[in-house]
Image 1 (cartoon, one colour):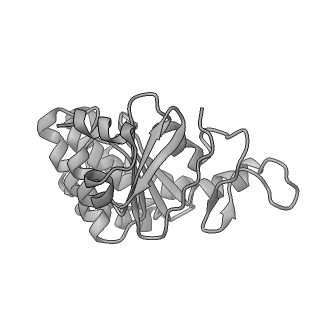
Image 2: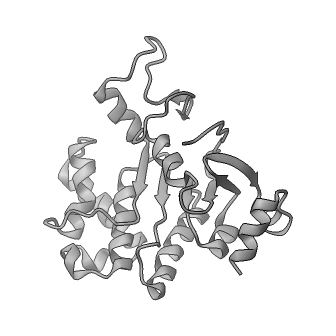
Length: 233
């Protein structure tokens, strides 16, 4: 259960969410795009509240909610690619059917993002032929193809073999350098330190510390964060 979370993510910022298992990291991420419905509090994306119609104070219609959700894209730890579709079709599916793009436009966009993540050469491959790192890079391209205002990453490397982690983190670092707004749940401490504008630490559903990465990793304010960081070495 999340309680008293106060968090603002500025455009172009990378915010990483740290904490032990069960601390509420993934729940917080899923609340941002209303995959989890909070009992109270408000969530705004680009100044507009998600989930609740501000005028009627009633739940948003599914159509309105879908439009708001389209401002976000989520990359899951388990890839969630459609096994019966090629790499290219996995990336074009949502732009065509959710955003109403013409296939030609969607395919051109998809190929540009597959190129960005180093997967354009696999455009006609099916997911079962790909490594975990390749699947995750396709999932990132799929998220980018929606041209979201914020990308949500839920432990994007936790399902990968150790030798494949670097290729996915490299892609995310390049997106950070390009100014994408991202909220990332991760266990990769060095990565969090290198890529973040702000680091957030959750404990039992409470946000107990947030700071810039240098301060967070070298001068933590709470004993809980100090203990957490000591265990990472």
